[in-house]
Every structure is written in structure tokens, then in C-alpha cells.
Image (cartoon, rainbow, N blue to C red; front, side, top):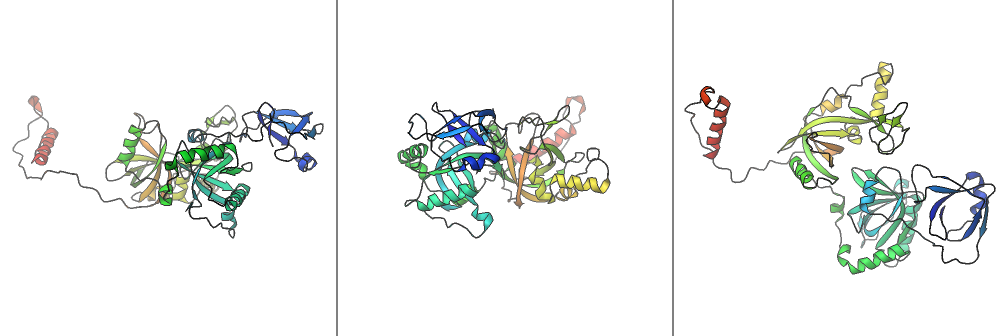
Length: 434
């Protein structure tokens, strides 16, 4: 339950399974109750639905009574709407579940003027609705509605005489799918459209005052990642040093760094590299002092395009797309075949990584502030999109015509003259200058 008191404090309420039937018929959304003889406990570490970190728990001694009169001081709704920057900062942390509001761009890939035809035959498709939602303070973001939230959205969407414009979804989980920030509904999520609640009404008013925000969108442009060259990505990092972004990059694999294990021990929840404590593994991102460990790929490859050569670090699922197997499965198989303790064996780099040398791929690249610093000249590959072909190399503009020249003499390195190497460079400069 989500409970609001007369002071506007919102807290999560909890009834154990053994007492659920006792209160199930009595509890109704929007009603006011008095609760006595309850106790409070600390909320769980993951998935907070309220700022209050104490959970109101109902025990065998608790008494719940319905209040007949309406108390205006007690709110019927309370939302925790956050910005794109907040969702970005909390991505994959499994912490607070905030609410999001924005205006609809696409529903299951269809523009709003094309009413979607809901798929109900395929169970996997019918339990999900994918929405492209434009936020007021950020880009278009994918929102995935699942199960009950998806069903409620379909019912409300179809019941609207006019096409709905504004959507509010509560308690969404920010996560990264295919290298892109997305919001996923949870079992506690509720959906509201247009005139249902105050935040959607306010957003709808804002839209009428800013008609340019409702311009139509090309479905292909929304879902397509921008493809850049290595040098263009480097220029973006220098131009936006504090920004995290994702691009596609077509490059040919030139070499694989050997002598490394090809994987790292990661947190099962957020995929961050774990630190070893005195007796347990610690996750620096989640703050979990007893984190569950999994093996993730980490392979360094040298790649090149028509302009530059760079190191790509292949992480996680990108490695699975080359091997066809998770790193954990590969290690377990190697341990079984060679015997001994997995912690003591050195698992070699899978041959398929070496066989990929010479192949051209389209990589999904993540750029972050730590890329291209004085100590780091690499890019992180989060996904191998597909096989590809390098685009034709553009000839340089205004190239002067080449002329044949004869090297009459090369000064000796002694006596203060130029070296043989310098002489070759001078000859090259003469040839280019015509």
C-alpha cells in the first residue's frame, strides 16, 4: 500500500500474506482509515516507492477502521515526478522508483494519428506496450508498460474519444536496454492520461501554450542511433566532456589484446566491477556489501575506420553476441573440462574473439567523461549491432597535383645537418607542394 497522512507524508504500507485475506475486502483505494497498534520497520534496499524510509506494518494486534467523513487535509494523490537527468543518474541502481510525465510520440511504433491495433494473440506481445514519450526537459525516451499497467493503458487509451496526448506513469524503473536509457513499469505502476490527475492537467495546459512541442515525429528517426566515425566521436567528447551518450560506429577489427582473462567479476544487479572486501565482494555503485557476483566479458580490441585507429573495450552482452554464450557459461564449461577450482584456473580468451580479426562490424559505443583522457584512449562497446562494410573513403579536398622530383643529395647527420630521415621528410614535402 501507499499511504498518505494529514501532514502529507507518504509511506509504504505492508500487510503480510497470512493477514491479507482479512483486510482485502475492507481496503479500497482513496478511502480514509484510522490505524492503531501498528509497527514500523526499515524499508528494503531496492525499489523505494516513497521518500519515507520507514514501512508501516500491520500486525495481529493492529486495528483498521474506516472513516466515513471526508477529510480535506488528506491528499488523495501524491506523485514523485522526476526529470530525465534524475533517471539517468539512477539508471540500473534498483533504488527509488519515481514517476514520469510527458507527451506521447509513438505507441507501439505508431504515430498518434494512427490508432494502434493491439496484439492479443501472442502472449509475449500482448503483455507489453512500448511508448515513445517526450519529456519536457529531455529527449524522447522509451517507456515499457508490462502486464497490468499495459492492460490499463490499452483500456484507457481506447476509451478516449479523442487521441490522448499526455501520459503519467508511476514507480518506473530506469534501466539501460541496448545502450539506451529506458523506463520500465513495475507491479506497483499506475497510468494516467490527459485530464485524470493534476500533473497531467498541468502538462496538457503547458502543451497548449507550446504547440511546437507536439510536432509529429518520424518513427525511424526516433529509434535510429546516430552513426559517427571514430574521429567524430572523439570530437564530440572534447565538445561535450561531461556528457554520456551512445553512438553507432562502423569499424574493422584489427587485433585483440592477449594476455588478459577476457572477463571481470561484476555485480549481478548493476554490472559494476566488484571490489574484494575482507570476507565478501563489495559493489561500489549499489553500495551492497554482500553482492552476488557474475562474470562479464571485457575484451580489448584494436579497430580502425577510414580515418583513425582506436581501442574498443567489448563489455557484457557485446561479447555474448560474438561468442553466443555468456561469460559465466563459458567459464563453467572450461572448469568442468579441465577440473579444479574455477578461481584457480586461468580461462583463455575464446577463439572466436581472435577469429573476428578482419571483420567489419557496427558497434554501439558508449562515451563518458573518462574516455580519451591523458591515461585512457579507448571507447566502450556495449553492443555489436550487425555486420557492416566500411563506407568509401572520401578524398581530401583541394589536393595539389603530384609532381616527380629528384633527390639530389641527402645531408649527413653529422656537422649540424639534417638526418637521413629528415631528408626523406623534406623530399615528401617537396613532392606534395608541387
